[in-house]
Image (cartoon, rainbow, N blue to C red):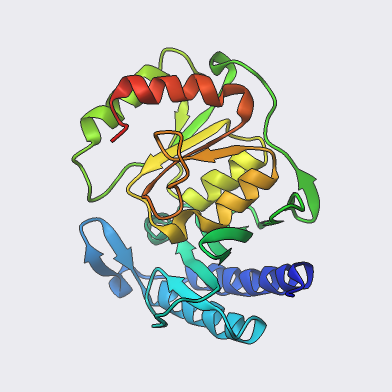
Length: 267
């Protein structure tokens, strides 16, 4: 049996060290070091070095685990019981432009179910963490989702796809509908932060498509343990690897899902 409480403390320390490295590099960062992976998708030595730091330390924490990482600094295939799912710098575009909305996201899945989540919000120096079945925490203090009913009192968060534009008409229809029945929609540019903010009660709902597992793995655990709901656009459970997610507080979730269905986003 793995002592998940001891494990999460070690993972929190890893996330903090990676965040400190990223923050230090931000002071003298130059766009000359940026590479383009694909349309509107960027990477730099900061992403890669942060990932290497995280991977090397996690190998010692749980040697038997596999890895799914954004920058592919480690190559491991096979049927692993435990898998680390890592985004070493979620919000790279923000980082490049000096916007303080980027994070380190480390999730651990057991048989494809996320069981541990750690997110470090580099802009505010806030550490979010959760273990399945044991609640969610921000800087060591318990957090929970907002409990205010009514979409008219809800603040939403989203992200825009940067390569898959086929569903944009339906997606924009959904966003347009929110203008008339919510307090507004924010686009921060880091899915991990968006999910952490749902868990902390700052946002009521986060929704997005075109995502990868490393964008959401840690945040899924944190939202669920804070009392939130997490599904795909159809209300199902294909939200870790399915590329789409709705995460929100239960008192507005059903009303928001009606807007999703009306938009035509459901595949």
